[in-house]
Image (cartoon, rainbow, N blue to C red; front, side, top):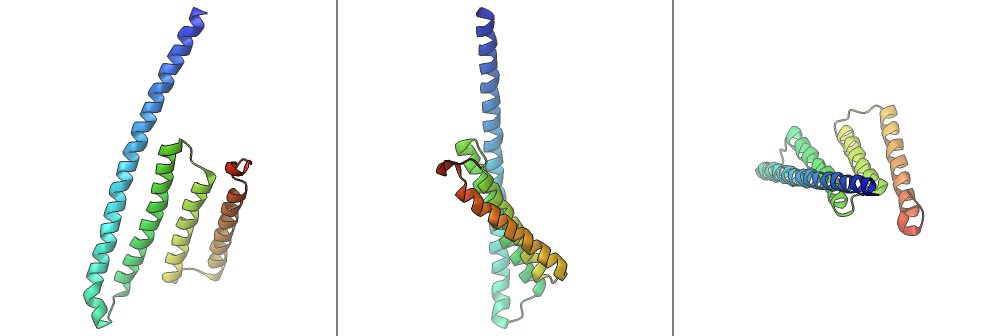
Length: 153
């Protein structure tokens, strides 16, 4: 029995070290995400600030406006990623619903950017729209089949 107890306590020690290492890494990633979101937010504010004088003259540069849209959509993707990390910190679990939320936001970002740049062929547009619809359907199913409702996702 002593050998089993020694093995068990060694395993518990290794699992505790692993748990603490994961905590440190995840908290470090959350801090990095906060910094990245702050920089992205300030970039959006800077872009808006630079566009304010130009808005009065109605001569907005298309590239400046595109940069603003890209930065704004990047902030939304970062917010979703940050939410996923913070949920992981709280629960030690990344749910399928959260991953689909991030994927939907990222896919919509790409679709909007390509539409705005007129860089999509009709086939590519239909393909991306099908991907978005499938992701939204999958996301809806995760809400219906969630563990809170007694079913596993």
